[in-house]
Image (cartoon, rainbow, N blue to C red; front, side, top):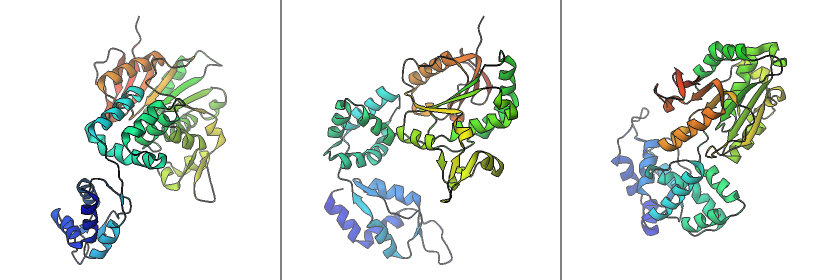
Length: 354
């Protein structure tokens, strides 16, 4: 769609009304006015190539047509077109550097998440931006790009059954095998995002060990590719809505509420965790000791099969004999792996040979 066509749409209520009526009318309240919902947003997006919705309500009553026109006036001309060649260059770079497989279905995501960087840097095209990223010898532009493209959605006690299994079966078995005093429990949260997973892990271990936490050392390494996510994780400050999955008892023991309504992780919990940036695509990892447990959940869904296979081999090399690997429930390996033995859904144990 060109600029003239876009302006005509914004100026013509009948066109807007037509969009609303072209899709199914979702039931609304008593006056039976059709409602514009999220599905409409997706439809409008696909029909307004080159425009970005940044101020449209999740649900707008179509009965008041001027409200819809007002929302549509929040469209902003993006001005950037991602050609097939440009998408190929960017997706190949992301794959080679970070292992993330951006299929054609991610094309609009790339446009949406990178166009702000193009505007900020004054670039006239995605090719010009790509050249800047690949020619930046500091590597900062590449880090910024993956920060924008990567998804960092998580929450406290995500897939809670994993933490229940940890306390009911896995921690007791690991502790039985520890040689004695001075031997630490070692955990790795790979792809820790904004910190909810490693903090959940730390709370779970604290609750299980109780006073023994002062005798048995606990080391939790938390790594991610995103500098922005790691910065939030290191701060350890979360909105009230972000802590909704934490029980009031745990929240009061391990967090402090601030005057602005946010919750800050207490130092006693933070000191158990070391946050570091790490690209999982490295061929070797700079670890001196092996881990008893590795969490890498909802990370490999972005990788293709060869990348996942190579990553699993590196994880196994970092696990203690009989160590455990937790994956996301959508990343099940089945029960045929030669390196890992199936324990429970998305939970595996390193096979001990000889």
